[in-house]
Amino acid sequence: MKSLVVALLALVMAGANGQMLVYPKLTYQQLMNLNYGPESCPYIDRIVNYLETQQIYWNVFNVPPEMLNNSDRLVNLRIRAIIWGLRVDCSNPDRYKK
Amino acid sequence: MKKIATLGLCLLALNASADCYLHSNIRMTRQNIVAGPTDFRRIATPDASGSHCVVSYRVYIGNSWRNAEGSASAKTESEACMRARDIGRGHVLAEVEPTQVSADMQMVCSDAPEIQIHPVRVGDVIWESETDLHTMPAERPYFAYKGTRCRYFTEQASRDNNLITYQGVICKIDSTPDSKWSVVDKF
Image (cartoon, rainbow over the protein chains, first blue to last red):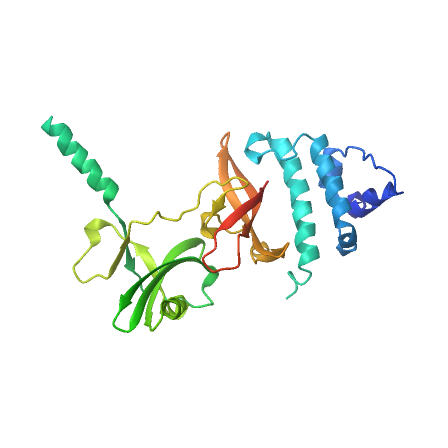
């Protein structure tokens, strides 16, 4: 199961050679399997840009969730949840520590 | 004509009626408050000692937001209102049916718009307790984002006979206790 997890940072860095990046569109399954860790924090702006590009590909960027059909809503939910997870975790590293 | 006038007066009376609550026996402690106190609204009036302040606010107890109220007197308005915010002085307010009212009950009535949970949209400016807490307790604490205090919220909706849970983020507009919140994302 763990092999299904796609490291988000690896995807974003794969094309990072200083040129304009054209990211491929991820499939529904690839989006659901995306994962990230604290090593992503220094690259958060690039990752957010990558994820918002995926939202554009899926036609869900800046669309109220009430306007989306269920599968698009889940795609949007997954992407926005990762973006906010990164923002929260990177700005509040002690949030989940007991 | 007389009937129409009577009906009009009845409707006017219904619209003018205030929401009334009883001071409940529920004691507020830091242990039983899941979130808040928040959404402070205050009314200060002069009294013999200087100023009397009544502060109404919202606390999340059990699994819902509740109205609460505290009051205090002091030499200055700011001191009185600061004391009134102390939850040790507060009472949770319980909704009351007019038929249950008796003469010795201590009631609180207000014409101010009632704060309650409702569907929100990105950009709305709201009271914090107009949204529900996140369903997962681990996601309930506040977090910092771009120098402001934020939290996740969830919103239940029904679509095609299915229950949908939207999530979102609200952030406090400024750092004052009376500040409202802005809906910054919903997904």
